[in-house]
Image (cartoon, rainbow, N blue to C red; front, side, top):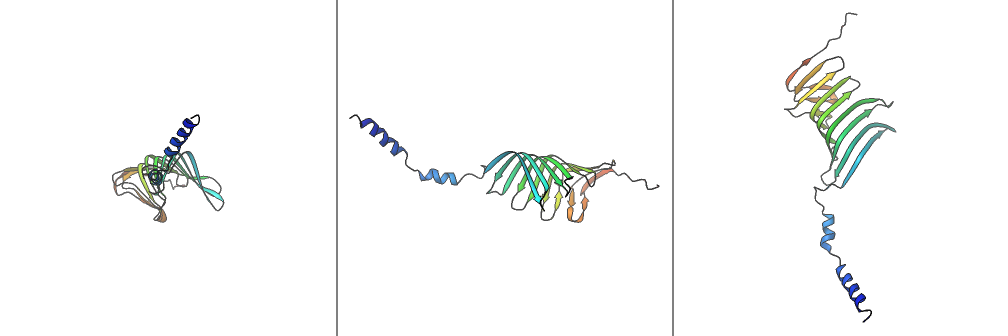
Length: 184
């Protein structure tokens, strides 16, 4: 009888350790609402021709593989030229990256600077459509363009067609243009 209690305990433990296939299957069927990964203080560098070209920094990145989405919080974007100088810089509170199309939906306190144009673009929402290389706002959203020379244009329904180097507003355009003095 000395060994009776330990044998009984082992038998109970073995019976309790049976595999439950329902729990195993549940682990592979995780809800689409649960991220595959969450990363903090991320720096993602895109390298082309052996040199950094784009740098994306984010406080938090949530990846949802089944949705083909990444959600970035407190984002900074930087494009650099071949010499490493910043060409474009921008910030946003939030970005949704679509991994299947490489499109971006940006929102909250957007501010972008183009060194080439010496211009700032400010908005609350923008959508980057990668295939057509177009940046658009919602029709009702106001976008403001400010140049270093003091020119400022604001309007709704902003569209920037990068392939054609064309900017336009669909509605409510106002602002101030500054002409260069060509008398010299």
